[in-house]
Length: 160
Image (tube, rainbow, N blue to C red; front, side):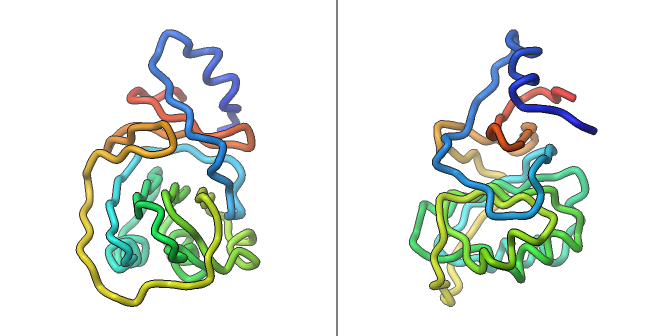
């Protein structure tokens, strides 16, 4: 279904719509996406995210990840390929990505604050379903996210 985030904002001015800071850029190949949010809180390590993208069907879902902006590449070509294989629409990451030469050709949106070639190999604790806040937005599991080249918006209600 085609949509534009600007039109969604105009058509739903009576709803509480949040807009993600424009510091987040899309490093993936998909330029327009929407879906229900699944939240993940990481502590440097991306192991929980890797297992989720590799092993779970993400049809109609967008994963929002908070890695507290640790300077490690959390998502690269391998994790994004898992996301594509398992139907995830997008990853919104409060952190950094890597392998951007390859990720821009994978048909999944990948919003992050920048790139870093270094990755963390240590296994650390992570969790799912937590409320996350970054980029001027509060993300809750089950909220809806819409993204295109104008930006990323979040609403508790389904807009389309």
